[in-house]
Structures are given as structure tokens and as C-alpha cells.
Length: 422
Image 1 (spheres, helix red, strand yellow):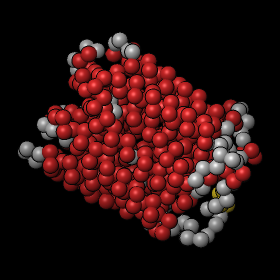
Image 2 (cartoon, one colour):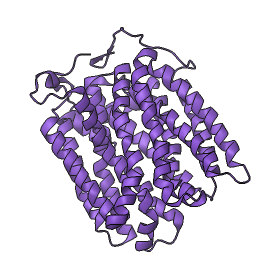
Image 3 (cartoon, one colour):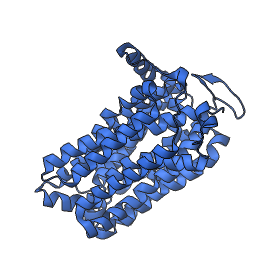
Image 4 (cartoon, one colour):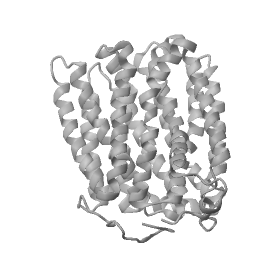
């Protein structure tokens, strides 16, 4: 894959290791804004006078939903003005609104600040995918996304424990201050080291007709649509777990202060899966790996449903199976993302925005519904995991015209897709 001229000629040229780490940390700022808050939800709710236990989930739910809605815009703007300007505006908004969260004096004020924080974080989720697509595509993109995910997924592993520690030292407000400081560090790093990656010939005019055409192309390309919607449904069930994890593991199963460690253990399986995926995906292909993982996810989710109906399901009957689900998501997410973006080399920003909008918005709505359905058992989550995976399979079959495990481009083959070679 030929890299853009900005990467070949720029004195700021990044090596692969630094590039992967930087992209992962940019993306991780959104995950940090979610997962570090989990241990603090009960304390935060008490301090701000929230009596309904399920209502505290809104601190996570409104952030996810706003992130999804706002992710519709950064990509199209970056297709016109470049990746760097949009990225740094997003970082500035994220940092400022995170500090506003830290000084919130009421629950409605905190939720409003979280919505504005999500406006900034939208660019932080869209831009890395567009920047990566500027450089590579196909199975190489799946490998690079998996490498990014290995670093990125360290955040859900460490964030609850970090949140628990900060809660004890500085209270829940200190958690937001720490988020803002990390955002500043990442911003300085990106400013000094990240060059512009958008090809001059791929710059798009900011016209409503152009934007709508690009969005329509992204949404209606059959080979992409099923992967975007299917990924959204799968991640919706995962968001449902994140929304209710503290209540389910910490309270229902009685883990208490062990909750951050147990959550970290589950999330660590996604790191291992992405690490493995990065090493096998170019050999076997993104479709073969992700389709196999999806079928495995369906089987494990069926086990979840059976276990949830036991008279007295225990923590250690729930955790290993949930960890298996999360591990399989590690083989699904990056591969689905690379397959969905393959056809859109010339409009990678707009395509990334639209796909992220669908993925996060639909996932956030589903996650909120699953979280609010929490009834003191693992049953709502178990049925969401099974139902979501079956819907995902149907959507993938739509995109693949009924054929799973195809290898569209065998190793060593090349084909023009947009302005990139696969």
C-alpha cells in the first residue's frame, strides 16, 4: 500500500508503533469518559440528589447517544478542511466540557455538560478511522485497527480501577479533571507529531448536495450496510452491559469493591482477542475471522440465556461467559469496521462519520434500553446479547448475499477501491 505523500515526505513522519499508540489514545478519550465513571456512579448520584438507581445510568447513556448523533458531522468537515483542524477543535471542546462536568452543581447540569463533552468526543472517534483509511485499506486496515484496539482496549481494563483510585483520592470531580489533563497531553502529542493525511485530490466541497450524496452512498452500499448495522447491534448489547455493569456485578452479584477488577478482567479478553486478530487477519481474511466469531458469539449468548434462568446464578457462573462474549467482540469490531470502510477511499471522512453515527447512536439507544430493563438479574442482558447477535447475522448475510466466509481479495491481490489499492 502506497502511503500518502504527507507521510512519505513529512519531517514529522510517524513510525507504525507511534502511529498506532497515538490513534489509540485519541480514541480512548471517549472510552475514558465512560469507564472511569462506573465506580463513581453511586457516589455521584448521592451527591447530586439522584434517588432512582437506574437514573444514574444516564451519565453514561446521554454521553453515548450524543456522541453518536454528533459523529455525523466531523467526517464531512474533515473531507473539506483536513483531519488535523477537525481533530483539534474536537479536543478543545472535549477538554473544556470535561472541566465543566467537574464543577457541575446539579444532575441536570452534569448531564448537559456530558452532552457537550460528547460533541467534542465525536471527532475523537471519527478522525482516527478516517486517518487510518487515508493510509491503508482491506485486510491491512483490519490488522492496523486491531493493533490500535490492543492499545485502545487497555482503557476499559484500567479505567474502572483508575476511577476507583481517583474517587478515593479526589472524589468524582477529580475523575473529570484527570480526563481533561490526559486530553491535553494527547492534544500536544498530536499537534507536534501528526501530519495531515488527507490527499489534496480527495478534498470535498462543503455543499449540502455533496454531503448528502456522500452520506447516501455510504448508507446504501450493500456490501457495507449490513456490517455497519450489525456492528451497531452487537455493540448495543455491549453498551447494555456497560450501563448496568456496576449494578449487576457490584450489587446483584455482590462483588462490591472488587467490581473494577472483575470488569477489567472481562475487558482484558478483548485486548487478547484484538492482539490475536492483528496477527491472523491478513492470513485468513477479515470476513472469515469475523464470521466465525459471530457464530461463536451466538452460541455463547445462548449459554448466557440458560445460565440467567438458574434459580441462584452466581458471579462465577456469569463472569467467564460474559468474558467469552467480550473476547469474541474483539474479533468482530475491527474486522467489521474495515470491511464497511473498504469501498470509500475517496470519502473516508464522510463514510467514517456516517458509519460511526449509525454504530454509536443505534448502539447507545439499544444499550440504554437494555440498561433500563435491568431487573436485578442477568436476564435482560442475556436476551439482548442473543437477540442482537442473531439480528447481526441476518444483516451480515444481507451484505454478503447469503454467503459467509468468502475471501474477497486473496493475499497479494490488488484492486482499486475509491483512491486506494486493496
